[in-house]
Amino acid sequence: MKPLKIHRRNFTVTAEQAVEIAFILFFSNSFFRTVLNWILHSNTMANIISLSLIYSLVLLACVAHPSKYIKADFIILYIFILIFFLSTITIHPDYTYYYIRSEYGVWDYVLIPYKGLYAYLFVRLINDPQKIKRNFKISGWIMYLYFVYSLQYAYRMGFWYGVSGSNDRVKMSYSVLFGYEVLFFELIFLYAALKNKKISDIVASVIGFILILAGGSRGPVLFMGVFIVLFLMRELKQSRKKAIFMTATVFATASLYALYTSLLSYLAVVLGKMGFSSRFIELLANGSVTQDSGRNRIWLAAINMIKEKPWGYGAMGSRKIISSYIVVGYPHSVILEILIDFGVVLGGILLIFYIINSIRIIFKSKYNEWCDIFLPLFCCSCALLISMTYWSFPSFWSCIAIGVNCFQWRKRRFVKKRVINT
Image (tube, rainbow, N blue to C red; front, side, top):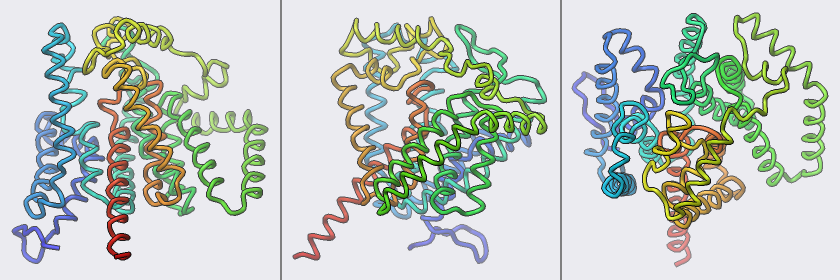
């Protein structure tokens, strides 16, 4: 592969290596921005420097190998999203405030170059599941340093900043965002630990679980459970010894159920000795883990919006109404949010397409290598069923990118078979 010449004696980096470095820097960008901010005492300069480094590496790779690294599908997707927002604001000028506000607006959620949509680009740049998985792990170890720092800072302060109702900033005993950021990497390490049983992956998954318990909400723990269920279903489907596998699964489930109270008590003691408190364990102990935290009325308002205008409200169409319930303005359900944005017909088609292809990638044996990275990200994306917004959620856009990678992989394999047969 043609190297990118960097003016250092005896040092060259290939376009592929440049893209992989950019990938790692993108997915661990919070760590590097924090370090730069600490050095420069300027969050703006930290953002500029970190983003300049990431995208200059991508640009160099595109110049060296344009046919490989200039992704037409990302350009089309980006243009479509821009047109979607521009046409929406033209039809609904009353959305202007919700688009331009400094927090929770279009820039903060969609266009800023280190959030969700751009995850699609970086996953597409590396069309190799093993390299994607390896680079996610490297980013994960780097981000664990950032998570530990964030956790100890919050405990030193005595609170996390969050949002509640119409308030922009409230002090909370946990962080929803923190838990889901950790979950992104936790599930990648947990999948690798269950498949390969390497010590480093096991240690990383344990660290991630402790971080979630110590600083996150109950949601990430729920979706770890979803991941384990889907993982076992997939292993059972592909296992040649289904009876043994089913017996082991039932035995493990029964054992966990029997030891449920003891395990919770032990976790509470361990976290307490480490100086942490766990909201999730406290909720379990109090029997209140199933409380909806006000989501029912948000969902009801979103459903009423769909009933009133089933053809859709346009990009971020929920913000104007839902902001009266919670300042962020999204309905805390990806299904409701997509149906509000795109309408029942187009939104329903998009959701069905996403679900069907996700099931195919997870359960079809021919996608085994891709599933190694897709399943953890898909389960992390399931968090969108009860929280966050798909516009800024990196695992959601990463899943879509992996789906495109799978499509291209199948296409190449089909062409190769035809050439061999002829």
